[in-house]
Each structure stands twice: as structure tokens, then as C-alpha cells.
Length: 309
Image 1 (cartoon, rainbow, N blue to C red):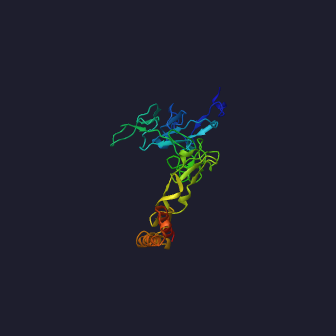
Image 2 (image 1 turned 90 degrees about the vertical axis):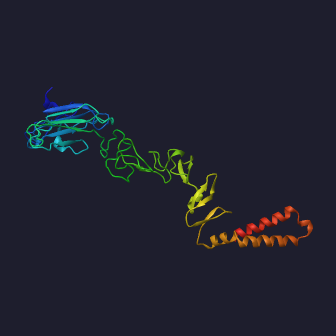
Image 3 (image 1 turned 180 degrees about the vertical axis):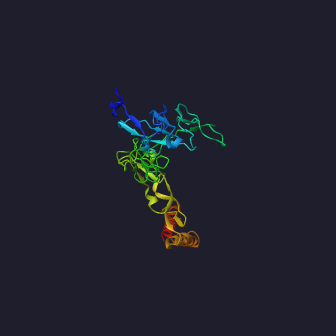
């Protein structure tokens, strides 16, 4: 086989558009520096940039490469370049990927620059270790990434660190994330309105409906209720700040409302007045009607009427 016959399906050529770089002076391909499960390639070009030297990392991939791959076009998604920083340092003279030196599960890169000058000394030499890492925003699910929608922006379902944001569901193939139905913290990819299960309702304010697979806001939270009774979804237990609870109907009213004033007043002087009236009325009832049951019923009517004012 001739190198001229490489077409991307049977192999490919790696080239540089810059002259006299010595691209390929050193080559290594025994590791995975972005933890996507595919081996990567690192190449040294020690004479690039007038002898500063460059090192190029090309990410392996499952789709075919073009027949000719230009390292000058690396964009951080297909791979990246490491530029030498010292004149005539020849960075990239020796390169390797074959170890995980920081124990994060990702292979690291070693680059040698033997002609580097340190503290004015000629040929002092320099060896640099670059930690491998996943690349968030390259539309590939790598390493410990939960999602990758092709950008490194937050607030679109997939965060800038490639984690799934609350209220979204994301594909495992690098596609865009779906906004779930309100109340559902993780929804099915087959439909953003469908919640995966009851355990994914975002808070106790929601209850899971198995019929349509959604998380439904409990009725009492449509008002100004802070905490509802779980076994009584229409009844409020605790109101938000600035609201007063009607203890009879378990409804929240604004503390400045007329109804709230009536509730507050009804718990003090008005309540005592009502009880006194009830007792007075009971004394005027014939003896046959003043059994404990009759008096008790009259008392209950009086209190209920009071709270309803």
C-alpha cells in the first residue's frame, strides 16, 4: 500500500501547512487523554515557530477521518496544540501518552523540550506534564460528563461543566437537552411533558400522576401556601410570610385583608362574646331541649358562624 492511497477509510495522512516544522519527529498513540474510550494521537513538531516547537494532540473518533488531516486546523474539539514557550527550546522533541499521573482516570501527556534555556543556561532542557481532561462542549459524551450539547453554556439544560441541570433531560449522544414539564426534575426523552417516575418530582409540592406521567402541583400550592397536608392536598398547613391561615378552612389570606382581620378578631373578644350569647340562649330553651347534646350543637353552630364572618 502507498501512502498516496490513503483516503480516510483505510487510513489518513497528518500534515501541517507550515514549513520546516519537523512534524512527526516524535509520535505517541498509546493513551486516551479525553476519556472518551478511544485512543488519541500526539505528535511533536520541534522546529515549529522558529524552534519554539509545537505538540499536537488529535482525538481519536469513531467516524472516518478525512484523507488528509491538517494539524493547523485543530480547534479544541478535534484536538488541540501545545505551543513551546522558549526560543529554540524544541518543544515536542519527545512526546508520550502512557500514564495517569494525577490518578483521575484520564491519561496524561509528557512533552520534552531539551534545548530550553533556564536561568540563562544553554540546553538546560525542560519536560512538561499536561493532565488529560474531558472537553465540555465538543458534542461528545466523555468521561464523567452527564451531557454535552455542543457548547459550554449554562442554562440550556447542559451546564458549562457538562452536568444535567435541574428540570431538563439530556440525550447521551451529545444532542440538545429537553425542558421537562414544570415540577419534573428528570423527564423522558420521548416527550418533555412526561416525567420518568414519581421519584423525579422536583419537590413535595408536586404529586405524580401515573395516568399521564406528569408531576402535578398540589391544589393548595396554587394559593399562598408554604406547606400543604400531604394526605389532604386541598388543605394548607403553613402559609407564606405575609399571609394568615384560616384554621377552619385551611386557606391562606393576605394579612392585610378584611378576612384575615376577622379571623384574628374571632379568636379573642368576639369568640368570648359568642360563647356568652350561646349560654344565654341555652338558658331560655325549655328543659326538654337543654340536654347536653342540644346545648353542644348550639355551641358548635355559634363558633362556626363566628369563624365564617
